Image (cartoon, rainbow, N blue to C red; front, side, top):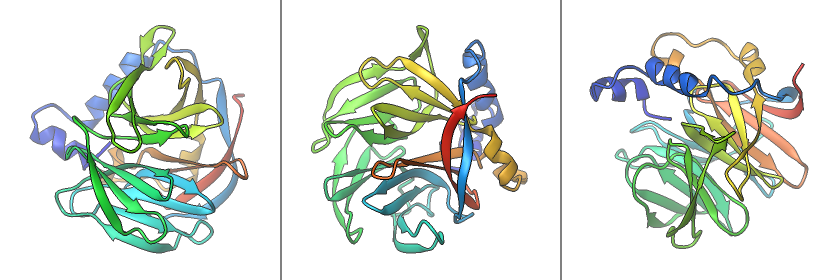
Length: 268
């Protein structure tokens, strides 16, 4: 997630973002080591001020959602240069979250507003809003229905046109819940998901919610500058996009100056 999540947690009297990350690891430390890693195919520029919350590659175009109150946006980005071609700034009360392309639209979640904002994919003009309860984190679809994460170990199954909930997927690894599911992407019949504040991506069965495997993306950290100060706990891996036509997988992070095309390889 999220805002400066550290400042929000502190304001709520619930500890620090570092403590939240420790809780994630404590809950998952019994899992076997990731079976796969990533190998960088290409590097592209990425706006280092972009607090990436969602990433989508659709019909040759890259779209990105950025977060933080007063700074949230929806963007169309030129992959090769990192140039922002179009940008819509959200109202100050919205904290942008995950996005998905659906038909001729881009649907963008908001964190705590219970609103999914629908934009025209061609020009990013606002169309309408769809309602949901609770928090919105990540969003993707399999061509039939949306899958939405809310920071828990459960994914909601939603009607793409109304956002009415059809069911739920409980994400389990050997029967144990996987917490803090964040940014989502549908990749070749699987759901790839960032686990918030870690360098791991979990591969999820969209039929059962069972974990199919893990991807260790920690090697990307050596290719981006280390953050300092308040940003240190926030410039985490977050942002998965898949070019289905060319079978290319892209990863980036919050405030990262680079976006990577990667391939999944056996973990050495």
